[in-house]
Length: 246
Image 1 (cartoon, one colour):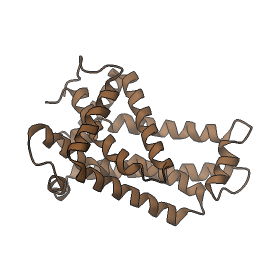
Image 2 (cartoon, rainbow, N blue to C red):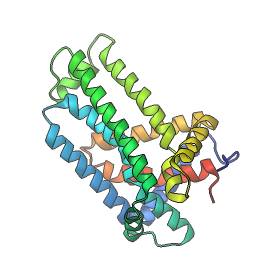
Image 3 (tube, helix red, strand yellow):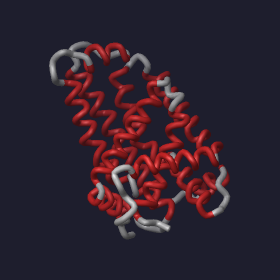
Image 4 (cartoon, helix red, strand yellow):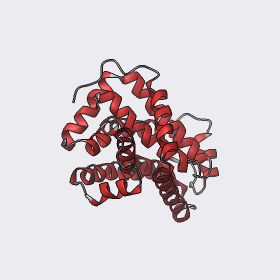
């Protein structure tokens, strides 16, 4: 699929957010269902690992690595809305009932990446933190706010190094797999070409995703109920612009 040569500007991510919000407002039920489901899973993580923050920090960030594949049904909503096809939960269920082998494979790959980060994060925090990290206060005091440069910066660096190729591999690939019959390999290569062609707009897009997800988490995960579907719909429009998809 050819790269768009005219549609992508530095402010394109803001346009994608505007278009994604319009889709969300137009079809709120599927989006709210997805957002609530992911927030509930987040609350489950907190319940299970609330006293093991060394694990919780990695689990949440790893969970967000997998989230794009879990919201792939919302790409169908945006696509169907644009062409006048049914854009409700039945369209989402139709996608999942298809049990598309390509989406399953990609989801497994994202799950491996997320699990790898969870284990890496937990190992770094337990091995390098000056005291056992059992709560968010411990993480803030002994990792984030420690006076010496070291663990937190290394944690962020390693997380960024792991997240960057995942983002580059999936930013176009997942909606492309939903929209076309492309192979996983072709979809991933198209995604990497898009990042190579428009590194600055997509760096801004990645930053906006992190900011909105972070804001959603800081509200006790309630904000994720809105942020998750908003970003999913916006990601569809990013795919359309980046690949000049009809």
